[in-house]
Length: 85
Length: 396
Image (tube, rainbow over all chains, first blue to last red; front, side, top):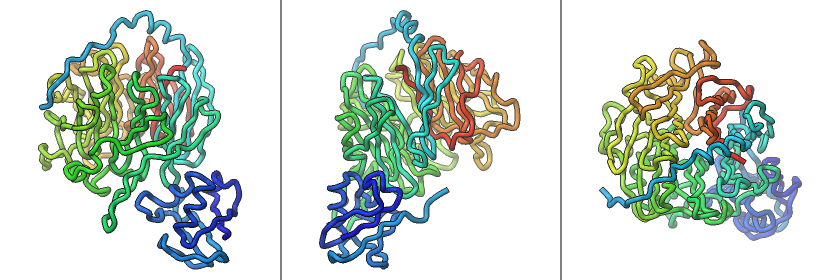
């Protein structure tokens, strides 16, 4: 599926869109990390929680759990939010 | 009190090597809230070439050069949005690569909260006999070690799982404004198994067995009035340094004063009582002399009333002792004479190993200052940088 990558993480992907696969959000992020080592830990902490200033949307709806089931046609958007200055 | 080993004195025959040292070029590594800069000095330390920004916009807590190879740099980094990591360079900052496994706590068992590293705060190269070994201190308090030059990191020792230590560490709300920190990781140059670290809050700790067991080292230290000195959680050491020329001597800048410790004693002596009373003995950083264990420098901060943590009366100065804390001398020549309300953080003052020694500090208002004569005269190296978190210097 298509995953939109925020600017803060493009040092890993070198582009704004990446392809990843998996039946859950956790699996998709693991697949992203296989292709772009280190990217997952910048978004997800060691207790498997989405970091404070990262938001993840699936087909426009915010997702808060890594166990969220996904379909191959879903679009995942990762957003950097609420931090600056 | 733990059994103490007899350790050989560090080699004091340093005259010839100090002369050669003074010819070496130095690099000053400045870590800020918005990136990092390297300042390369000429052999006389008169002119400086700025190399940066590195990691523009990243929060860089510290950059440290590996003194064992003089090539490898580690940078402790995060951004406003992204989690913490460590970057490595093996070519003095021309290229950087992220650590494969940055410092992170163990995953908690199902149903338990678990701790999360907010940022790596402190980096200490391992003992000279252990190339590739590094230690890291994090916020909240965690102690980590790398065996491979900073590529992979693992929790070090049992303190992260010890209920007693977790209690002493307190919660994030108990810590300093940027989060509670583990810092001042010190490796005895005579013995890689003899270690110290400090926690803000959580006190000072020592291991004689390579980190397997730890003992508190709190005797003689004051705490804020009304709190119990016997409880490590109420102790707030800001910065501890070991003297390279006499590793049995340590100095400490604490939330509650300046101290000296001469081993094997385990009782800190409050040498800050000898500071001028209007200035006081509150501050963050402390620097020791590479060849004279009686000499140390501090950067006093106003600790009155609401703890402004700015230069007392707006008149910044470094204070030096040349007699192990019996007396202190104000060193402010070249610094602003008035209306300079500076703050210098605990990692933001350091010294090189040249003769005479160079001293360096960076302010939270983004100025980098240095002295080529051990603090007698100061000159500004850089202005208009972001908030400076850390200043380190190394010889190339």
